Image (cartoon, rainbow, N blue to C red; front, top):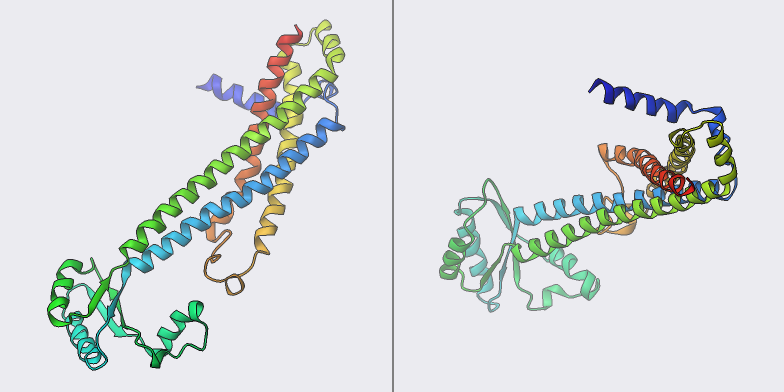
Length: 305
């Protein structure tokens, strides 16, 4: 264990401090440097949005799921002369049902607000044969939906209970797929960045083949040469991803607010301690850059032997 820790410390210090002689092997500027910085920055920028979408989807699904799980709707359809009597009977049944905290009839203005997105603001609710709606709020472990339906069928035949089960299941399924899509996007982003950095590292190694041959002649090992490339490309990956992460976070801050975007975009972005997640992106980008460069350097140096 001590030996492994010592090797880790030695390699980490080598990446941070470096070697001025070995660093000359890696071109400090040029096509490969800009390619590494740009690919790391662009991928980190996209990773911020993929992460924000995954977290926002989870929050939105949890909030809607909780709201739908704790609320139910009772719809009463009956002839005009009987609708009030059946409404009163249904309210009486609901008040004596265990697991129901409250039940109230929606006003005409509230029903009009519910129908406004589909029929416009000028819908004459009071003149139309619209069913009476009763909002039910649960408490504790909730109520027995099947038992409540049997009681309502006897007391208020025109009452139809909707416990929102058919709304919750598609929502949870869609949220799970969106979360999976978000994490899959992060994996694809990491793979794309690894491929770009591998190409840049291979180009840099090929361009410095003569310098590498000279270093070998004077006794430099492949590990010594590879470490120079690993350090340069890892630091470039860190810097590029850091800039891309900051740009991505700033972009999420200027997204439309809830009032402007409506309910669907509520919470899109980061909230609370979730703001710490983007800080991991540059570290992961550096790790990807290190692994990709290490594999490319070892493979290319073996082929040059």
